[in-house]
Amino acid sequence: MPGRRLLACYLILVPALALQWRFNRNSCVLNNLESLMRSGRWRDPGNLEEGAWLATLAKNTLGLHPTPMQMDVFLYSVLTLLWGLGLTHFLRT
Image 1: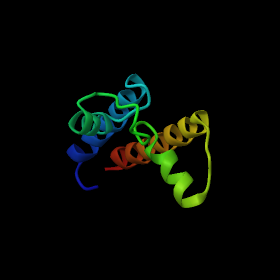
Image 2 (image 1 turned 135 degrees about the horizontal axis):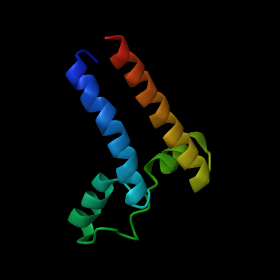
Image 3 (image 1 turned 180 degrees about the vertical axis):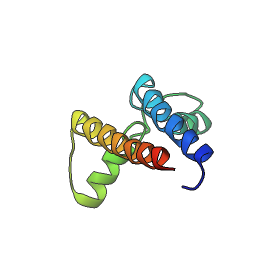
Image 4 (image 1 turned 90 degrees about the vertical axis):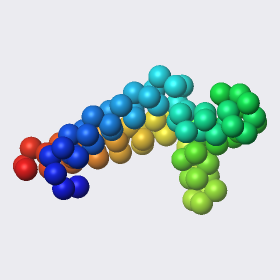
């Protein structure tokens, strides 16, 4: 990603994304908005992918059945790695 301003935005947005996920009970706001538009409810119990999109993807494509704790560890590890790489690049430019 070129430019220090874009990298600075990235370094702010990645932790903001993780915080949003954490405070929204492991559900993405985009999933909530989709549920709101489709069912009129912010959280739709009938939407199996709400808060579990990646777990659903792992199940359907790889046949894996990760626990919520395994998904949290995986997701936050990937976010931490990507944020760290962005920080390293930011400090080098």
